[in-house]
Every structure is written in structure tokens, then in C-alpha cells.
Length: 68
Figure 1 (tube, rainbow, N blue to C red):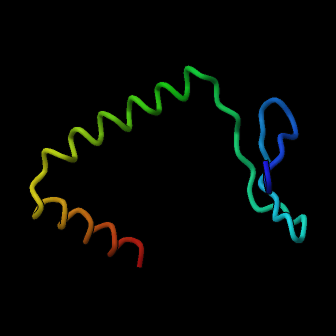
Figure 2: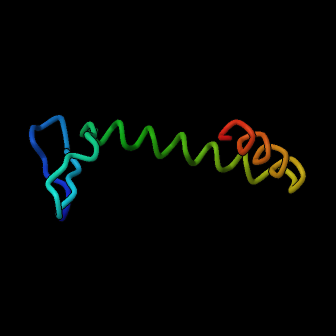
């Protein structure tokens, strides 16, 4: 992978290929952890799609206010 290299069985390091500066470190996940994360994301999306456009807009405005 360009810009990322595994350093151990438990970690992947993201590296700027131009400078070799470490940008971030990420844990390696097991297949079961990945499946659980995908199932949670699917469940959240199913709930989100049942919201009206007004409800979605309100949620996004609250998020934007928190990010400021």
C-alpha cells in the first residue's frame, strides 16, 4: 500500500510518502470486529432513512454547531 505499512500484526501506520512523516496509527481489526462494525452502520443507516428531511436537517445543523 502506498503511504501505509503494517508494522506489527496489531497496527498499521499511515506515512506521508514524500516526507516519511507518520500521519496516523490504526489498529488492525479482526473479521468479527469488522462484521460487527458493518452491522452497526447498517442498523444506523436504516434508522436514519426513516427520518424526515426536516429531522435530518435539524440533526445536521446540531452537528455543524458542535463542530464550530
